[in-house]
Image (tube, rainbow, N blue to C red; front, side, top):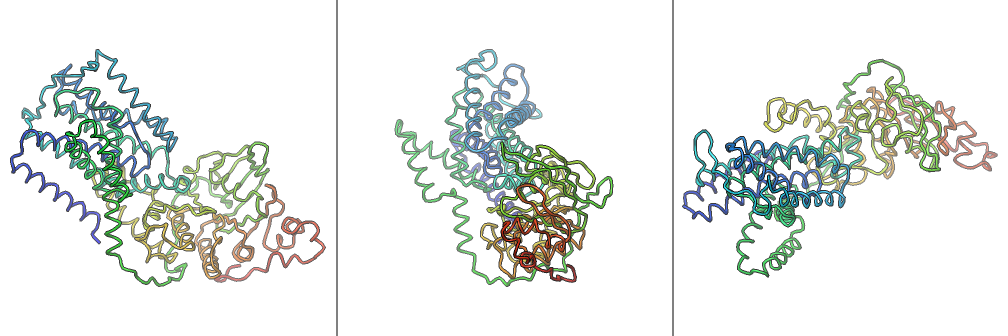
Length: 615
C-alpha cells in the first residue's frame, strides 16, 4: 500500500498535469471562468471537510463566512483602493476571527444544536448584507471591483487562473498536513469519543475551535478570490442554499477523505451547469441524482471506492497470537515531576459527590502510595466508578479535595489532570473505532508533542523528528500488549479482549504517573486475565502507580498491595489483602448480615498468588 506522502505527490502531479493540459487546449473565456469558480468552491469544500470530516462538526453557515471574505476584500478594493494581496489577507484574517468568535459558544454543543446555531448565523449575516446599505451596497451589492495586480502585474483572467490554482494547491496541502498530524488525529478523536479524548489530555473546545478557525480561514480565502474573479459581489451568492450545497459537496465526495472535497465540488458545479436547461425542474433532477448516488455509495464517492479497493486488495492473513505483556519492551514513566516529592501518589480528603438527593461518594479518605497497586472493590453501586470519575476530573466534587503528588487538583478538568500524568481506561471501552490501532496509540502522545501548528503545517524538522519517534514508540507499546500485527486495522474490528489491550496501550502512551483501570478484566478470558495480572505488576515495578477497580476478586488479591472497600459510597474497610479478607464488614457488604454466621471469610477472598515474584 502506498504511503500517504506518495499518494499526495501523485495527486498533486496529476492535478498539475490536468491544469497545464487544460490551458494548452485554449479554453473559451466561459470555460476558464467556470473552472476557476470550481477551484474556488473546492477551497471552501476543503475547509468544510476539515470541520466536518475531521472534527465532526456540521456547519450550515459556511456560505456566510465565505461571503464575509468576499465582502471584506471587495469593500477594501472598492472603497479604499486596497490592492489584491492585502485585500486577500484581510479577507482571510476577518473570516478566521469570525470563525473564532462563532466557535466560542458553538463548539460547546454538538449535533443539531451546533447546526442550528450556524444556520442562525447565516441568516443573520444575509440580512446584514441586505440592510447595511452604506457598507454592503444592500441588494445591489458592491460593484466596480478593480482587477487585482501583484507587484505591478495585472491579474488578467489567464494569469488569475494560475493564482487560483496556487491557492487551491495551498489549501489542499494544508488539509493533508492537518489530517496526517497530531492535530488531525485529535480532531478525529474528539468526534468519536469525547471521554477518551479528555482522558488523553485533549482540550475539546480548543481542538474544535482550531478546526473552525482553519475552515473559516479557507472560506475567507475563497471569498476573496471570488470577489476578484467576478469583480462584484451580491448577497444572493451567500444564501443558506449555498451552505447546503457546500455540505453536499463534502458528503458526496466523501467525508474525511483527501480527494472527496475536490470531486464533490467538481461534480455538483458541473451538474448544475448541465441541468440549467431544465429550469424549474433543475432542483428536482439534481436532488434525485444526488440521492441515487448516496444510496449506492453511502460513504461518498471517494470513501466508498476506497472501501471497495481495500476489500478487493486485502487478503485474509493469519495472525499469530502474541504473548503479552512483552517484558522486552520498557514502560516509560512520566517525565513530568511533581514540585514536592511525596510517598503518596494520590490523597483524597473527604471527597463527596451528590446527584440531587443521591450521595454517590460520601466523605471518602484515601491514600495511594507511589509505585503500588491499590484496588477499589465493593458490591455493584458501591460508588467505585464514581470515585474514579471524581479523581480523574470527569465529575466535579460537591466537597472535599484531591492531592496528586502533593498538588491540589480537586475540581480540575480531566484533560488538565491527564497533562499532569493521570491516565485512565473505562468500564466500557472508549476507543476511536474508525481510526487505526496505531493511530489510537498515537493520540495518546498528543500532549508530548512540542512542535507548533506552524511547524506542523510547514513540516519543519522538529515535527518530522517527533512524528518518527512517537510512531516508533507507539509500535513498541503495541508490541508490549501483543497487538503489533493489528497496527493498520480499524480499532472497531478488534476482538473485545484485544480492545481492552489497546485501551491500556493508549493510556500508557500518556506516560502516566498514575493509571486508573476501571474493570479491565471484564469480558476477558481466563488466559487474558492471567496476562493482565502480569502487565499490572509490570507497571507497578516500573514506578507506575495503579488504582484498580475490579469485580474479579481473585485477580484483585493476586496483584494488589492495598485494598479499599466501598459500600453505598462510604469506605467500610481498608488495608492489606489479609486485613480486608478477614473483615466482617466486607463479608456483610457482599453476602448480607445473615451470612456472617458462616465463619468462612476465606471463601470470599482467596489467598494471594505469586505473579512474577510479586504478591
